[in-house]
Length: 482
Image (cartoon, rainbow, N blue to C red):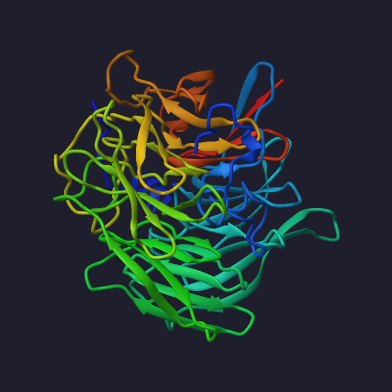
């Protein structure tokens, strides 16, 4: 049976970790030759600077992951759900977590060799919609909006005694753009060092903490933003509960809508999704610059579709049904995109322990966790797309594609009874590497059994030393090899 949704401190904290929650290599092609979004000079290293790897949210990484040899795993217990685990140019992992008790978003600096917490800093508590999305800037500082509706840059350094410390280096209030009853759900830098942000209530804004300027616009009434946003040289992609947008800004920093494309949002929220609409953080991809197209997954009733748009004008590149083999029409995850290939992981029926306020009832009221993973290839000339493979693997995390090895990395949630779709408190979880050419698992390792290891559809990050860092509902997993 599925785990029932319950309110309470634990459920609320777990919900905080996933709210507003997180590319294949063509046959015969060298993985490193696959185009990905360009490096944003105001973000940290590609692959580790954002939850989705880069500011284009490609969910790719240039890092290889665990090397050859036996796999091992260690869980750092932080009594917190940790949806965001990033690594700066200095090699030090930074995690943004929400404690089970108190639910005050907390930044942890982790030991790269062990995963243990070296230092922590509690931020101002706010809405449960906060405390999920953040990124590392070009100085390895965590950029996040806290409960005071302030844009923070959190740095780390050693004190006179040699101990590590975390501190707020810069603060810019966003109260002029973010209502008191609203919260920022996503943020990303543009190519001029300004910070785009989006709120659950449907506000999109642009802030410059060097000048103090903050400007914003409201999306049409009734539209909410339940996932993060993505930035590319062409503009900022935002997917609301009704439509996908590309926004640009004038020289004075005023946001403007370049185009809007509505999608099929279905009749209601589905089980395994956290809002009534697309669960996608929009993904930039393309065969040349890596940003010619923008991809999302809609919320159509019978079968969800991958929607790919031209970044330049919003016209449709293609629309393809996905997740048919698993029979679960829904995804809360951002698509993985590299070159002309896209991966979609299904979350239909995933047993989230709680739902965000205002999520609304699902139709049907419950479902078993179907999972599913689909690869779709887009024609290089942008005239259509086709499914390459479609399977029933049950990914419990946002997959990451290593362009160094051409391998997909994720965590699978297996049923206690093989061959079923049931989920329960004793489900086993295993780290898995997947061949993007076939969709088959090439290597895996059980990381644990039971709810302590629930990765709750959060994104993993490959560190420079090859370790795979994966947030769970109670801390951070570190998977290594050799």
